Length: 274
Ligand code: F6R
Image (cartoon, rainbow, N blue to C red; front, side, top):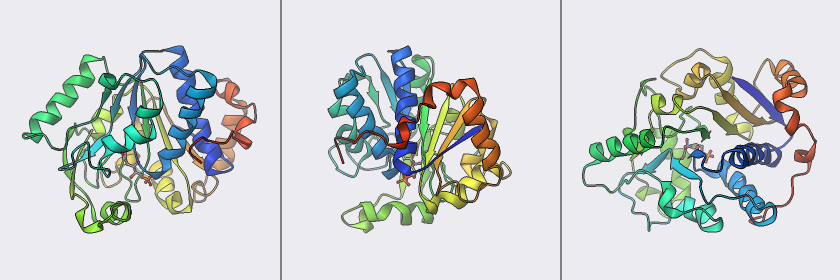
């Protein structure tokens, strides 16, 4: 695992967008794992700007989202399908047939979970998985006590996740209490993971996820087992990490990060969505 600390939230999101863009330019048929949530909005915004201004091409790219609420149709504006259409898919030249989310309205949810795993397998797995982190440490909707080898399945949402996301619903009482989510095991099989966290309210859980012991109580700690996982945080979310001096040295000196050390993320270009 590596940790990159950027000065502010937008700089962190811009760096993530640049990393995705670099992979996409190198491999146009990239299989991207995608996340939703407030943190990701500015990543998608930067990708939309890169599509419009820098000809970033999504036409051959395939995507698989981490999760979807049970019981919300794609037409519901609180569904993650709607979120993705609105924030990314409708704004770039991606082929909609190449975009995948679990169907939270499938009549047989267990069969839908198996179908989703098969679909990921058929494209030979996920090349680059984008992740956020919940306040309870979930990745996707892998709530506390998710097995570290779990696969795509239905999961009951924790009280902390309900409290985190209910304000996003017109009527918080209508927030579904269950979701389909890729499992921790599914996520760990992706070839590369990028986790983005910003803001002081994530500082505690980031310190536990990165520097704490691996535990099924905090799914994000399982990323310590991943061979190629990069955690990108702003100063606020890095606030409770203890080894930041070392992380900063690695980013400043390791050849892998050379293309991203040009200082442009100090003042990211404005997003069309701002
Ligand atoms: C949603 C997902 C979640 C979010 C997490 C953070 O697809 O994967 O794990 O990334 O709940 O959400 P925000 O960014 O709203 O704090």
